[in-house]
Length: 166
Image 1: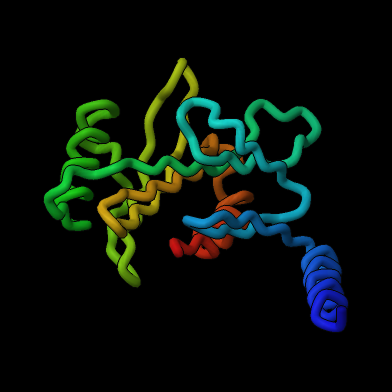
Image 2: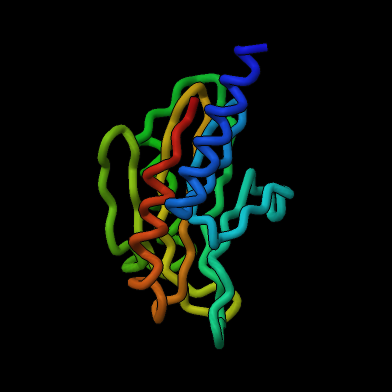
């Protein structure tokens, strides 16, 4: 009984602390991620995603910034992060043009690519993080329009940095 009460109190304290700092957490057997309490979480699997974290609605909002996670099973042979990144960069350039990649760098066992492109007539900026683990590619993508990219960049990067594969 004491263990259950102790666990309940600990979970309650964590929830209060997360709420006080405006953070929520989603976790399952495979990964965990934190996001601002005023953003919404969608785990319905829409567009093949594992999850989408969507910014709050703003006045005169033309686009809701979002972060999505796609997990790809990789072939049984080992594919390196460098190989995965090279393939992805080629696909980005094929889809959006040779000069679409604004930044590409490896840091802390992850690879980050920032690129621009037009989808359905809307100019967008994409920031992707690639992680390879357990023969899977975890691809997190922050999507924004140029007009609001700088405003949402810091909170989006905080979300991306919070992502942990178990």
